[in-house]
Amino acid sequence: MVCGASRGIGRATAEALSEAGAQVIIAARDGHRLAQVVAELPQPVGQEHEALEIDFGDTAHIGPQLAELLHSGPVHVVVNNSGGPPAGPASQAETAAFESAFRQHVVANQVILRTLLPAMKASGYGRIVNIISTSVKEPIPGLGVSNTIRGAVASWAKTLSRELGPFGITVNNVLPGFTATERLEYFFEQRAEASGNSVDTVRQQARMRVPVGRFAEPREIAAAVTFLASPAAGYINGINLPVDGGLIASL
Ligand SMILES: NC(=O)c1ccc[n+]([C@@H]2O[C@H](COP(=O)([O-])OP(=O)(O)OC[C@H]3O[C@@H](n4cnc5c(N)ncnc54)[C@H](OP(=O)(O)O)[C@@H]3O)[C@@H](O)[C@H]2O)c1
Image (cartoon, rainbow, N blue to C red; front, side, top):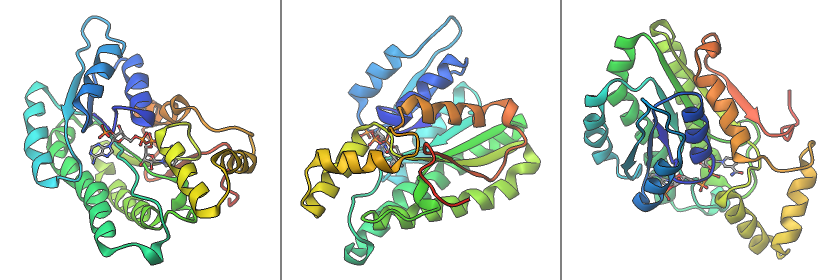
């Protein structure tokens, strides 16, 4: 199951997992886009992908909607991914923004986990991969609510990795750096507005900070997620994996 898969990193992840042979459930709010993605996913004989129109902010309905899907068998891989919270400094954010981000990112992940975990445990195989952000290691200026919530998801994941390891279930985080998606363009527009620079200038400044000199393609993030979801990654558990072209300066 790949969350937030109607576009961007989630969509690329659904593509990579289906190329690797997985039968994929993609979830997001925009049913029209989801239907297009499902139709375009690689679908050799025997693979049947599904779309689930769902709002991760509406946590009361996630469990019942997901439970219906379990009739077609256990979900072995969950990729938790959702839209990032609005930009802005933490000191100026309304408390409602923190509550809403906590619900959409932490509570939603927990509801998904509780719904899918029994079947995962019974299978003796599970992979939970959370797409969060490099802000787990270095908070990003101007993304106050996001920085805070990413830290909460990282702590949730580390705790779970220790609880679920004995069941053959690993829990890991992928931390994308600048990745060429709609979210990145939104981030540059916000930065430009706050700094008085043009969007082009902000984009260029960001690119210059990345040691490999470019932004990631969504499929490059997806490749890391796909590896962590595979049997080959069975001994990797509880990590934060930056996929950032070397952006994070710390060890
Ligand atoms: N791109 C980057 O440079 C970058 C860097 C670091 C971290 N990240 C983080 O990585 C994640 C994915 O990034 P992205 O760039 O691929 O973002 P994106 O292009 O904005 O895509 C977000 C996906 O999440 C879905 N989504 C948003 N809100 C949702 C909700 N309430 N319920 C269900 N689905 C929802 C969207 O679909 P619908 O609108 O159809 O619901 C879409 O499929 C985000 O959390 C982002 O902040 C991105």
